[in-house]
Image (tube, rainbow, N blue to C red; front, side):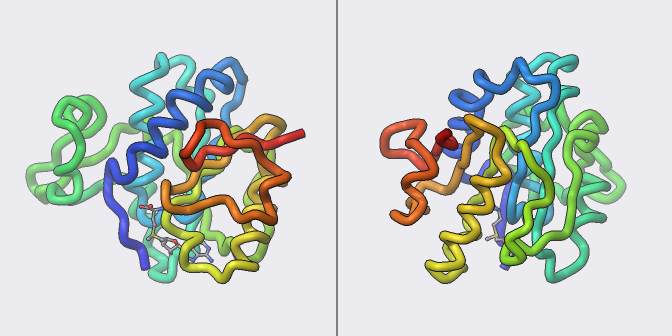
Length: 201
Ligand SMILES: C[S@@+](CC[C@H](N)C(=O)[O-])C[C@H]1O[C@@H](n2cnc3c(N)ncnc32)[C@H](O)[C@@H]1O
């Protein structure tokens, strides 16, 4: 089920901004993987948050790989266009909406800026294939997806995330998704009592 909205679970994205980004911002290429991204509000919320904290020049190094099983086969088109109806952008703080979107009054919608659209690339992908869509990610974010999996699937998918991360890369999950005991040797907790983990080794 692809329930999602802009600026959902901001605690997770704010931890990425405050804890992961400072360690990654000097990289020439900063790769993020948003696993189970639905139709785009989540990777675009990440892109807005990063852009608000980086110069335009540094932001060009940001590459967000947004993936989803996408049962509807519509997500790629929606994410590439970056056009969302007015009621879907209402949670976005007004000044950010003003800065990063263009109003399309004729269809009562908003189009996200080309700069942000260029930072997000959608790929259709099933997490249960256990084959990541890339490697050396600085951050893997996976929110409100693993709860739908069986416990053994969750462990295998988190091991795949570990393999897909660069050394010292971060795994970010929603605050109710604890790291399974079987994976505790792979990561260290990046913040006490929060679901942000750093790859060990
Ligand atoms: C509840 S939505 C969460 C969307 C977004 N992460 C958020 O927190 O707002 C769950 C998403 O997981 C995706 N999903 C479910 N099973 C998946 C799988 N095996 N591989 C990839 N994506 C999957 C669904 O298509 C859906 O878009």
